[in-house]
Amino acid sequence: MNTAIIMLGSNTRVEKNMELALNKLTKHFEIIDTSPQVQTEPVGIRTPACFNNKALKITSDKNLDETIAIFKQIEQEAGRKPNSKLTGIIPMDIDMIFWNDLQVHDDYNRFEYVKNCVNEIK
Image (cartoon, rainbow, N blue to C red; front, side, top):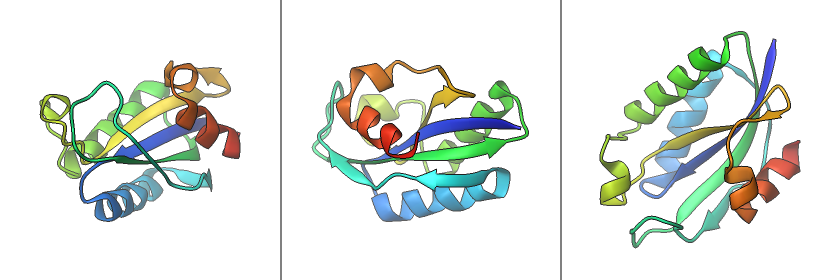
């Protein structure tokens, strides 16, 4: 069994998209813990909307690539499009931060809110 810490983020229809993502994730993974949801200003993207973010600790019987593929599918189901970063509308973003205690995404070092959310459940 694999353990992962992931970040969810949304800046549009936030409550609906967070709920959708959590419901979809529970169909594939066991959610062990969640951080509080925090609102953050956009960084590196042009958008008038703030983001809402939270970290989740999950277990997966899938490998890393299969797990990420499920995340991408959930993002699309929430309305994420290939040009979402260009438009600044991010219905759902799911990033793998740690996989079995190995850091696999640099956002943990780049953004204080990611580090704070992850450390809440690590």
